[in-house]
Image 1 (cartoon, rainbow, N blue to C red):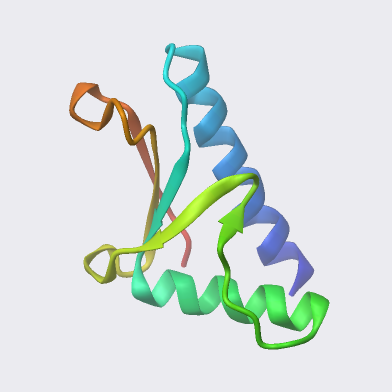
Image 2: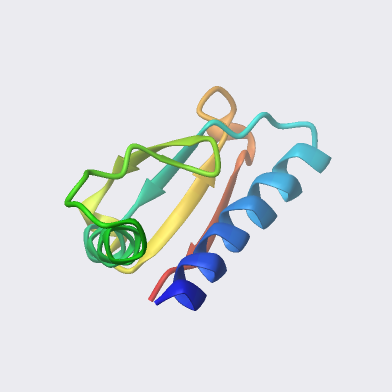
Amino acid sequence: MRGDLIRILSLVEEKANELKLEGFEPDVVLVGGEAYEFIKAQVNEEFGGDEEILELSGLKVRIVDELGKDAVVIDSKALGYGGARRFKVL
């Protein structure tokens, strides 16, 4: 559904902007396995096809199964310094 996809993209952008305001440079979205499959289904329903999701809102996507239904926007160069924001996808 378009609403779910818009909600997810809005959350990614919101968390990225929070990091930018704190001086970080977000560059990656870590996505749980269940969350990734949900996002992939939403994108493929909206745009057709069966493509892998490589990017969300200009940030690289990496799958981390342990995150389950969550995702985390990170600054990969400053992760140990608080450069991360987690959110629920499902």
